[in-house]
Image (cartoon, rainbow, N blue to C red; front, side, top):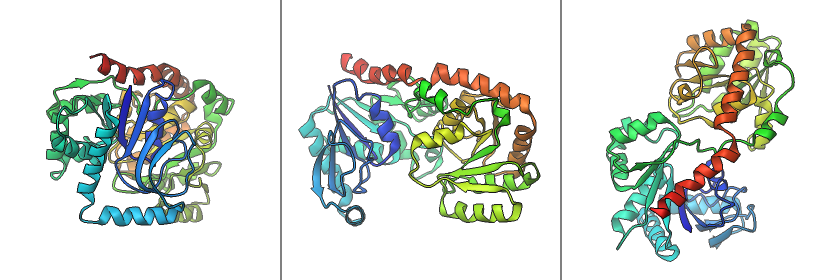
Length: 393
């Protein structure tokens, strides 16, 4: 079987999805939906088509078609220049059409909608002859947020009308896709992260009751979607309960780095910034040492950091915009909060900081949920079945 995946080549989410089918013996091709001149170092066993790429850091099992410049900064600069050129969009569409003609894939799969999905749609409009069966996978906010924006709604409807199969990780997004006019086949709802090696997870969790842990994890995104600054404000409002705690911030943006330094100075609460590009195993270990994991955003699918907290025993406080209600019982195995109200987030934190029974009971129940729904060995066959069921017809 030949599969052409259209996705962000430098994204860990792309790597995690492809890794689920790496042992099937299929011929997998990756066409980058955005040209950054970079590939994720964990890619392996596939073909990648890039116009320009920098220093090779991925496995030698990756076969690359493109022009090497052997310098990351130069590759990024040239790729940025290329993407800003007026001819770039047509160039990218035509390059994808040539790739489809050359590869002759049995299935085309676009991971994420606003770049990969829109690009595939334009290629499909220009394709001559039969277009291969097309799977669209919804990432994060692709429909939930962007579907409410006037400049995106018509394009989303076009994508969903043109594709044959739809996959997502929230039941919420199945209903949204139907409301946006999708009439094809919905594939099984499945975490895009591919789940976890549960034996490895168990080894990374700190021993003893979770209520004895004295770390709080905060996802550090502050952007069009992330609301880490709201989390820091909420933590500051209950600083009197945190004197024995350490606040650990990961994936911190520049604004959050400044706010975290001020938070530590004003409250005296020990605050640690996890460096960017810290190995995933270390992030998991830190969730496994945390009493509470706090993640705030105005929109998401099933947040990977939320699932990590669930599996590692850390009590999740998560915004209700991220499908967490499909995994936890609000007030019992986690707490759902609004993204922009530090007072309500503070109330959730105070309860989680003072109720040991809540924390320990939630950790036990959430681990059982993770064993049932996040075991990588059980999820891999589901991902593979996406493709085999389509080819079988």
